Image (cartoon, rainbow, N blue to C red; front, side):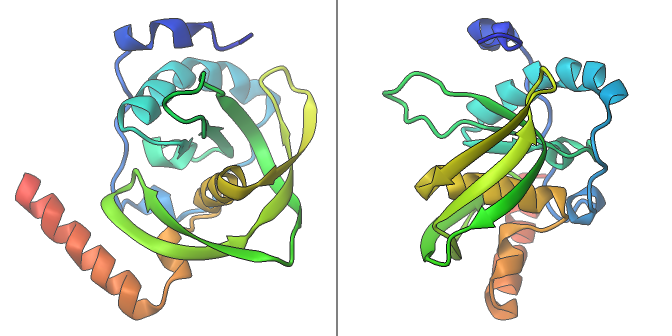
Length: 183
C-alpha cells in the first residue's frame, strides 16, 4: 500500500508506547491536523502500526501514544485475512444509522478491560488520507464500531464513558489494581 511500505518490515520496527488511562491526553480533545503536521505523522506511523498490531489491536488513535492530533489507524482484518490498514486524518462522522448495535469493546489504553457498548450500527465517515485526498466511506458492523471508538479518542472519550458510572468505576478500579500489580 502506497505510503505504508514499512508494513512489510513491521517486525523490525519498535512499537510506540501506548498510554494507559487515566493519562490526561486521553481525556482531551485532539487538535486538527494541518498540512504542516503531515511529515511528523508519517514519521509516527511505523511505530504506531507496530504497537497496534503487536498489542494486538484493531485501532489506535494518536492521543493513545501521546499525540494530541486528530488521526487514527484502523485495521479490522481477521488473522486469516490480508491486512487492510487505514489511516484516517481529521475523521468526522457525517451520518449514522438510527439502528443501534451492542458490541463488546476493549481498548489498548484500558488493557484487559471489556464491556458492551451500544453505538449506531452503520456510519458514513469523511476523512483525509495520507495524500490529502478527502474520502467519504460507508462503514458497518465491526468497522463502524472501531471508527466510532477511535474518533471518540480524538474527542477525549473512552469507551467506558458510554457506560453507567457504576460500570465505569468498576472497570477503572480493576484497571488501577492491575496496573499497580504490574509495577
